Image 1 (cartoon, helix red, strand yellow):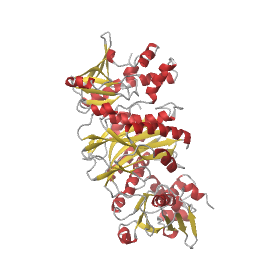
Image 2 (image 1 turned 30 degrees about the vertical axis):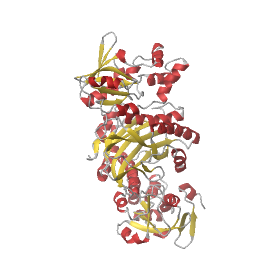
Image 3 (image 1 turned 60 degrees about the vertical axis):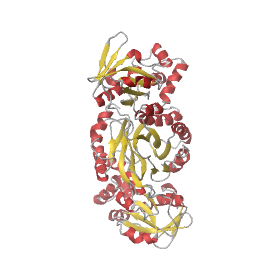
Image 4 (image 1 turned 90 degrees about the vertical axis):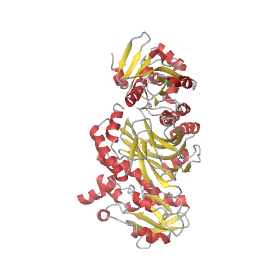
Length: 318
Length: 318
């Protein structure tokens, strides 16, 4: 892409410096110094315009979110983020768009202490792929596969906000402006739960981030662990904005199946409950049980057994 | 993307296993064990349909090339490849296309000993972003910035094949079928020079891979090193197919400005010349000199001074 080198150098050399970066942007590859005694943690995720964010989204939000969804994967492993690489595809070298995108990405990079060490800028339909690298003390990573019957199921923050925000942003749901703005902020600027993830080392037995929706992501944990789970619908944590949106006609399934919340969903043994609760901003929402699949217990005591599928599967039910 | 998990698991769990992978595809992130005493080497590159490869390209070639261009960056650093992550954007979940793409990628991964440890599959315009991770003994990486006046300039393999192959593939150049096929193979299935890159540690002072074209990439080395360079046009290594293509009316500038050859371009002090020549498949094409920019000396002794720009700049000259 014409000007690729200039663009990268101008906009992406301003993130935080790290002593463990021997060589950052500007050569064929970055040179990094992993800490001894640690495992390297690596994840990659793409955001595509029109698929992961509506056309016309504030470019600073796109930059934020492209990094945030990846950092959320590191959070779910209990990892400490260190470095990021960005592959950005742009229809044209729009400097204003790129400057805003870079500012959004850079602000979160600074907050998380991540150095941007490599990049590629290509011409094409708008998409951003970020790869993040972090570290975790060897053997201490949080995986999906460790849940055991009897574990409590926990989730951080609140659920459904992003899906309700998307419904409002796309005109499917009419909401007061303040409510819509609060939900839209959750959709556009998810906060990766990095500190919580690290504190869950040694407490959580399994962990995942809620990107596909509670039921789908809990299904992933259940399949990987060979267990089932029972969720108390009344225990699902809802933000004031989500409560207002549900009262205004928002999809009542949003907290169960809405994606993009980027909270941590994890299981922990009952002996750890007080320690987990003490971490703050976490809610106990159910129990791991023998078997397979996810059961939702409604406030009236009725229950639905759901296959461990995602959105479409769940929505297709009566 | 519906079926994302299945697709990834089915097609991308078959690459080579490595003992330094603690956890591969299937969790929020991969867990990797970097070797002690090494620096981590990381690069990312995107291929977009219609930009980096013509629509309708054999998907196995796209899979090969998506990994190859990244491995070429590791080769240019003198690194040993270890792990790769793939972010694939597809217009639809076309299993045939995906199976062929995966086969092309997997074959090269096996050959290079790279484990595919993470992935993301999204719906959108066709593009593949690969991130590769490798290692190099601390302090021994080949950078762009070490060239000194008096160094010899070397290049591996042959130049211009990919550009001439693209001209033939897009109908801009009529060639005998065997010639066109040989050039197209260079375009579609570049061979990253991994073994050569590792052998150049301690011999080369600066190194880059030829992705943008000889003049542009040598320009990058010159700028990073604060030097200039003089290239003997008659010394440029040409394949028999490229010679045939040039004789048939191919752009005579292709060996100088054609991109996508993925050869290694490097400088080395004169005392290392015999050792470098002994590595095979390398040609001495010029000399590093004080100053800036790249001079091309034609066979008749005339010369052109080129700014260290890329394609367009060069082509814009009379």
